[in-house]
Image (cartoon, rainbow, N blue to C red; front, side, top):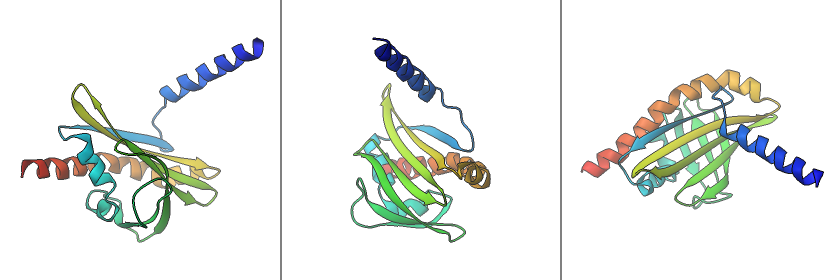
Length: 165
């Protein structure tokens, strides 16, 4: 009985901690509202060769095959650093997360879209994990975090401009 109570209490603490995430250079996100339906956001997100049209930190991107769970691709930064990525979470039409390996760590990018009160809200979330998360957060976190408002604005403009044509 005590074990069950302890497990329930631990689960409650973990759940509360997940809901109270604090923004830092190790873990950050940005959300934006649009009048466009979620499927239009989704179409832009899974069109990997065109990520460079809205992601201000990318020079190019490619994917092998269809965008789905375990799909692999490559991103090339503006500084021409090449990084391989793998889709590690995928809920079609709703969200995906891809992982890029770093020395002794990883960079995760999660993108998700939801509808609240008839409005579409889309979010980009980024976090570093592993032994070197602090090093990479210090080197890139502030820069990546600063890009997110422009990145989401670019997506919104692409979609809403297409809707008005």
